[in-house]
Length: 65
Image 1 (cartoon, one colour):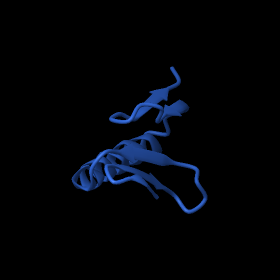
Image 2 (cartoon, one colour; image 1 turned 90 degrees about the vertical axis):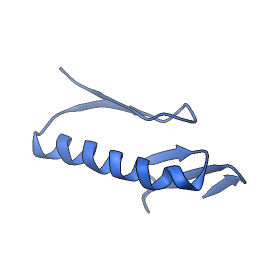
Image 3 (tube, helix red, strand yellow; image 1 turned 90 degrees about the horizontal axis):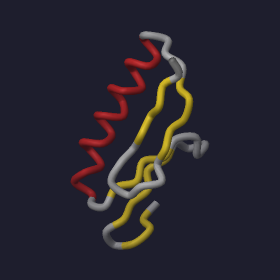
């Protein structure tokens, strides 16, 4: 979804996960980082408390202790 010429939102088909970026070049890097993070969470069976995408240039995944 293109929110403006320099603001993009990437989401799954079911809208369960969103990543917001401010230029197309960042999409590839953030996608790889997100894929690695989610892969690690899955492999190690870590529990996620929340995923925060409120801020334009960041994505926070907080794990439960």
